Length: 127
Figure: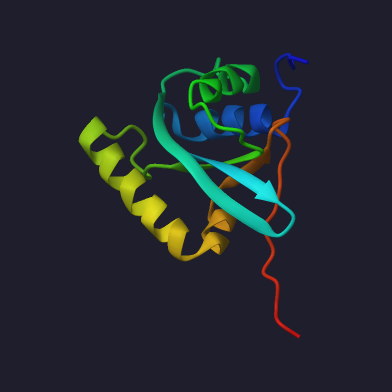
C-alpha cells in the first residue's frame, strides 16, 4: 500500500523539519529490527531541497539498497542545513561508526518502521 501525503509519521516529520530549517542534508541508516536486536544494514545521505518528499519516495529509494530492512533512522547532517557532499560523506561515516559502538544513539535521530511510523529505542537494563 502506498500512503498519500501526510499519512505517516515520517511525512509529518519531514514537513516539520523542512519548515524549520529549509533545505538540509539528511543522513539515514537502514536497519533490521528483530525483537531487541538492531542491525545496521546500509547508510546514505540525501539533500532535501523541497517539501515534496514523502514516505513512498523513501521506500522506493530504499529498494535500491537490495536489503531486507524493517526500520530506518534519520539524522540531520548539521545545523547549517545543506552540507556539501564531502562533508555529508564524512559525517555519515562518523555516524555509522558511532552507531556500531552504541545503538542507543538511534534515540538522537528520527526512527521509523517500514510503514513510516515512529519507533522508539529503550535501554534494557540487566536484572
